Image (cartoon, rainbow, N blue to C red; front, side, top):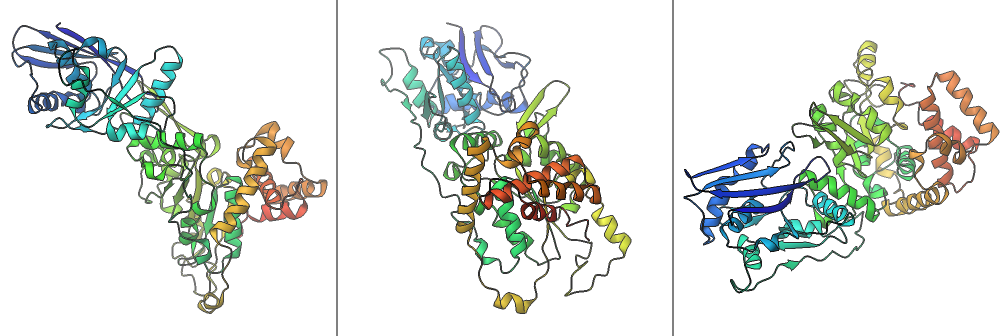
Length: 512
């Protein structure tokens, strides 16, 4: 036959819509035409497919007019994932493989010039889309390069097959009575074995002193609150931030799959780190697009790659103002919407922000060990780089003071990361049992119902808000923070002591 149809999938944000690869061979002047809104990477498949077929000992129709259509025509296609389906379509149109065996399968994979199959981005989103299609009545298997199939096997219930070479696929699809009779080997789901979330991470015990900052990080980890640490250079802000991930519990299977899908879309997923929380720490020269996502086609940014993980922004005031302001909505909603003229993409972005900054340009404002050389205007201008609306969305704002060398030498070791993590796990379990979510995610009626405070504590908070001029958002965030402190203390209601500690964590900048 001169017409063959092969099924594949494109990437559209976190979605993986179905793509039909139609290959037609006709008489006429020899040519190889690709249509269907194909990107440059896809158009280059012509050369890869031609060389892969020839070097694999397969026929290529050099004397035919080859037309490949990637439908639907209005869906952008990018990357080399269509190399394998295009090659199979050409072989099916020539009669070298059985077209009937293509009906119940989908294919994606990049070809080397020698015919080896190379992994592609987005294996997990493709497997998830395949599973949703099967629930809708279109049950197909997905053939991927072996490395991509191993990654996609994290999706339970998807019918996946892995192959290392083009010939592995061709021999399994030849007509009955031809070829070697080889079959595609199904890739099994990997066992869901919990990983050690704190394996290889530095221990909190190594940070000498800074008991107030350690307490703030424990509270933030227990309730999924954002943190801003401010202090002079060398006071331990980066050390504390690097140890924060060790205080968090490992991801639940559903959370791990969401995080892995985003990382797979960007080509950053590593199966060895399954169920470990991602830590992203972009440099302060990062652009708004690098931080929140964008481009053409839109790709997830650092905030989405840190989904269910930690985003550490060191030297926070040095980031471009536009990049920082772009964080405001994701901090509130847990997702980012990237709109373009033709398409709109939604990426998850429920990350935990850990930020660090110096109090002034020289870094020593308020440092008892070294005099500050900045003028009051310089200090105000430096701290003014952080807008009020952004600071309003950061729950915990804690000072990390300089520690004298003699204090460092005799400071006793504090609690280890494992000890703090156990308290964090207990507090999170208490929150989920009570309200089904963490305290930082409480809103509206749920916040009124579960963050109940004693009358004295409620009056204390109202008085503090009036005196400090806090907004309604700050009021609710202090209430969530107090609820987390109460959970760590295993208290049913928020007391004045819990409220006082929560209020103290909102005053770092206002006190400088």
